[in-house]
Image (tube, rainbow, N blue to C red; front, side, top):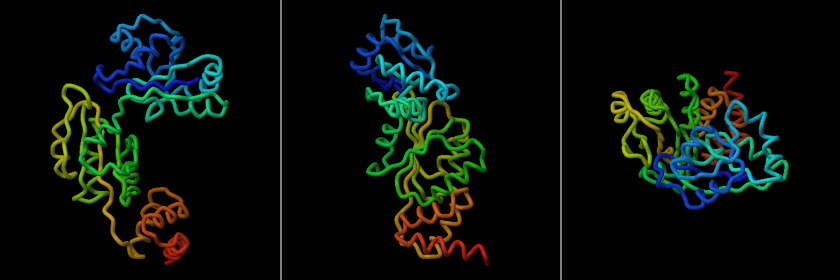
Amino acid sequence: MIILAATPIGNLGDVSRRLVEVLENAEIIVAEDTRTTQRLMKALLIENRPRLIALHDHNEKQKAAELAALAAETDVVVMSDAGMPAISDPGYGLVAEAVAQGVTVTAIPGPSAVLMALAISGLPTDRFTFEGFLPRKSGERRSSLRALASEPRTMVFFESPARLASTLADMGEAFGADRRIAVCRELTKFYEEVRRGTSAELVEWASAGVKGEIVVVVEGAPHREASADDALTQVQTLVASGIRLKDAASEVAALTGLSSRDLYQAALAARKL
């Protein structure tokens, strides 16, 4: 079978007993970076020396079928550098291929930067969406954020320290000045920190320079009764960001309760004006 093995996101003390047992007996480990895996096993005083196979963004598509077939014969442990494999890390392609080949897939649960940041953010946790990393280019990033402006669920993002201030400024532009945001830095590590505030407040802090692993949690859009004109504007904004008109109309209809067909027709009519 495929065994997705969650690893610490910073604090070695978060290693589970089950993970140690699996690593002590593993014959094959597929790792995002084999050097990182070797360092972890050394830190855990594990003397087992399994076969290590690298699996990363550049080779997963080519190796997935081969590794899934291997897992049909023996257990294959899959590890990313930190956290759960396949969640904004290599592993999804391998899991999809394993499922297609009828190979069993299981996981050793463990630390999650997404869930930890959400839990300590102070923002609603009953419904949320994980958006991963935003585009690096400012224009594409702004378009992505505008498309999320009406998202009612709490949103969780990963971001690099170098782009944090720019991203927070773009969030203020896309979501409005009053939207609550929590920036979680260096989770589970010695310098763990959570900064909460509006985009303007947090941009000032981030502009001075921030280091470490960053998770940004953003409050969802407040519920309000949308007029037909407001809904049409939302559809047009989504289309401008690159979403197909039909999909944009369906998305806004789901958020507002208005007719998807009516929104689609209204958008077509507006194009002719």
